Image 1 (cartoon, rainbow, N blue to C red):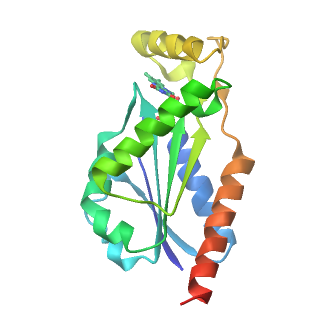
Image 2 (tube, rainbow, N blue to C red):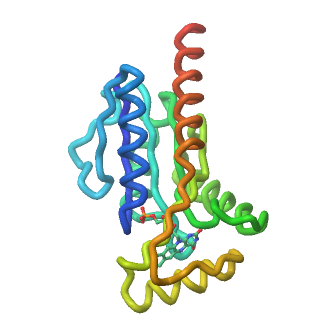
Length: 183
Ligand SMILES: Cc1cc2nc3c(=O)[nH]c(=O)nc-3n(C[C@H](O)[C@H](O)[C@H](O)COP(=O)(O)O)c2cc1C
């Protein structure tokens, strides 16, 4: 099955998630095509049989390139099995309010864009202090503290639970098999 995978990333973690998803699809015998949302003008989503989009949250927003693609591809996305993976630090939080907040902003973005993915996952991202400038470092330390974390600012931290991403992709693939069987 030809599967469109499109990601937006600011510091690279969501690209890593998208590449991981592409590898899983390949292992399962599918044909994933991976695109960066900022350079996906030539993509014709209607040529694919399923789609997985992913982007990350920065100061309460997803990357505008991702939001733009969702608006642009909405009809095609709604016409096929599709999934959205939201990457954030809130997803790594023990605080249910932080998790509810990121879910709300995710649902609002999807609703405003008019896309109803078949499945959605909140995946924990990473804190890459080594890549941040002074302001990002400050912002991230504040955000991390609001979420009850006090991570060592001298090292990078990856919170992505790769097993949960794998399980999500496996259930998405199982739902595709189910929908094909009932066609
Ligand atoms: C400046 C900055 C702002 C962020 N704002 C939020 C936020 O509002 N909510 C949240 O849950 N995570 C926030 N994060 C965490 C990112 O979502 C997380 O680092 C993610 O892994 C980034 O993905 P990327 O590397 O693909 O850009 C922020 C990170 C940075 C650096």
